[in-house]
Length: 119
Image 1 (cartoon, rainbow, N blue to C red):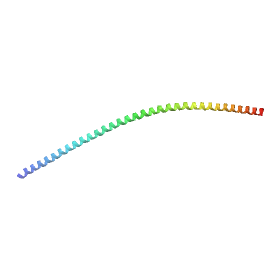
Image 2 (cartoon, rainbow, N blue to C red):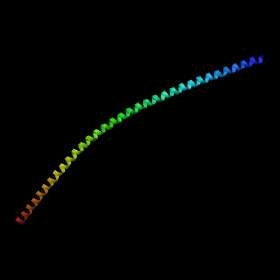
Image 3 (cartoon, helix red, strand yellow):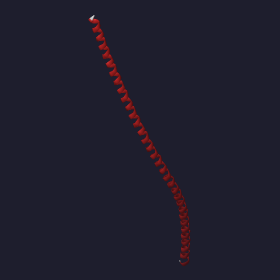
Image 4 (cartoon, one colour):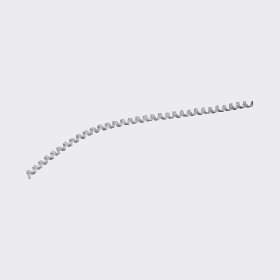
């Protein structure tokens, strides 16, 4: 009869060992799950911070684009005014050159007439 009680005690020891291993595994799994959740939360926080940073950068880029567009439109308007002024001044210069040519031609004709008259 000693054998059954030893067997029962050995069985209880084995059961306790298995229960202890099971508890250890459960604790290990809980800790692993906790670390996994913390890691996931940290990653989420990093992504959220990155999203906010990218939104800020995007807003700065949009602001810069708007500013450069305004400057470009101002330069284009000024350029149009300058082109119109250049066209007007070119036209005036051409007219003045024509007047000078007429005067020079008239002077040349007068000089030739004087040379013939006195010559």
